[in-house]
Length: 146
Picture 1 (cartoon, rainbow, N blue to C red):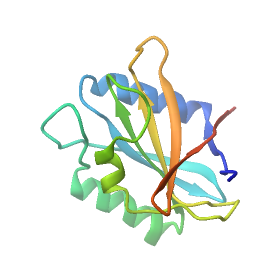
Picture 2: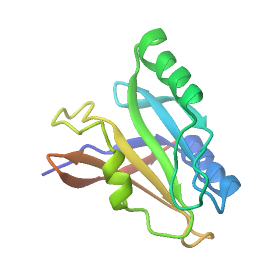
Picture 3: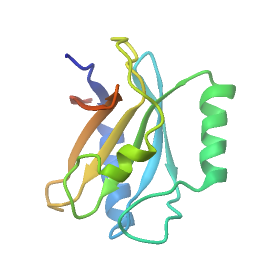
């Protein structure tokens, strides 16, 4: 199955990597709002999870961001992002367990991507995107654009 790519502006990719580095050794987290499959705004959300191996978005920040995305602007929730400070950019079983927005077959907006920034090799961060469809983890290409 072909999965539509997540198109990510170079500045947003750099900002997500910077967020992951700033949060290290903890996971960072945030949201990407989109319109017609394009990122229009990034929301950096505070991780309130007490440990270093998971994330939990601060509920008021998350609610305010989603209110702006859906109610005020009419945008799509394009992606949920977080970092893996010491492991590969692949959804853990816990990541998959909290994934509530499934992917679709729509080529323009295939659903909410789950974007992971790995700092396993800090000098070479890796960004990978995934969709969850029918219990399957599908990798989506990440296209960095100027």
